[in-house]
Amino acid sequence: MPGRAQTAPLKGLAGVSVSVAIDSRVPVKPDLQDAVQRDAEIKLRVAGMEILPQRDGLKKPRLSISISSYSPGAFFGLIVAFSEPAFLERDPTLRVQAATWVRDGVVFSVDENEIRRMFKDMIDEFLNDWLIANPKPR
Image 1: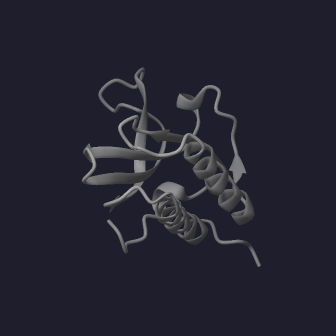
Image 2: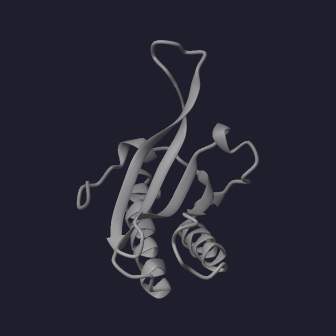
């Protein structure tokens, strides 16, 4: 839903863990994963969001960042998704990670600067929605 704020799922959110996954079929330098992780965590911290530890990741809110190869050499999908623990209505004993905020994009070449820029833009959208959902008291 690009262009539309998704603020309700972010109300009351104080922090997230961050995970970055890069499909092994995407021909990038090994340090891109660390660079994207660092970029994301810096943006989140500057905005005032706490970065939660990765242990017990399924029990905490999480911002997942990923790049996948859909057609080797043709194009690559970028996704930033916020998910958090939820219980199934039909069986409240089952706990799952449910994505409640998602942005995606496509790049047609492996330009690492472009990939980082697109991820930063998606994280800015996440933070804009988060700030709308959690206005600072005056």
